Every structure is written in structure tokens, then in C-alpha cells.
Length: 114
Image (cartoon, rainbow, N blue to C red; front, side, top):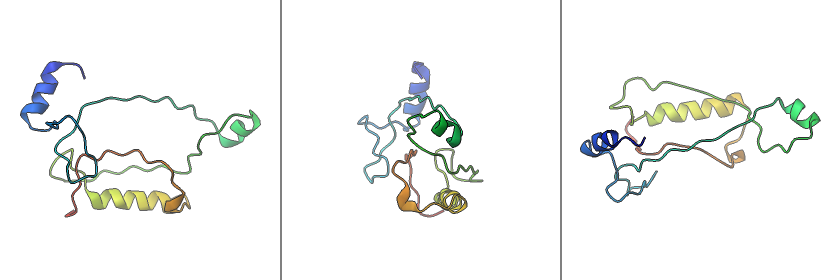
């Protein structure tokens, strides 16, 4: 992440936002701003967390993964494939869309023609 050569490589490909701001899911999007994050999650079975009297912040009801197949590039996922994955995970988990209070997403590019 801190290696200047990688930043130069991305800059030469015009992938970095010239204003240093990532406008995810916005028509002002003009590249991305580099950054890294980390999180620690402690997972327990719900019954164990309840019996241990833990402060439960969230319950994972389902997960999913897919591979978009051929797209123009690694940073251009298939919107249709991503939507299908989200719909499948919600359906398999018996969840309604409005029950979600937080979404973590990568939104550098949005394409409606997939």
C-alpha cells in the first residue's frame, strides 16, 4: 500500500481520482482514492452468545459469493450478476430488503448495460 511504484502504476492508468475523493455510486465518480481498512469480528453461535450474555451487535443470517465471468475488467463487475447474488442471499435467508441497516460495498464503477 505504501510502495510509491504501485501508486505511480495506478496513476499512469488514470485509475486514481484527481481530486482525491471517491464519489462511490455518484455521477461525479472520476477514479478512486486509495485507502485500507481492517475489522475484527468475533463470531459465536447465537445460542452461545445468548447464554454467555454477550452484547449481540448483529446476527449473520446468510452469506453468498459469485464470480461474474467475463467483464471488461476486474474493477468492472457485472451489475446483473451482483444483483442476482444479493437477491439469492436474501431469498435463501428469508430476509426482506428493508431489514438491512448496513451495507459494505465497493462502488468504483456502475454499469447498467450488463
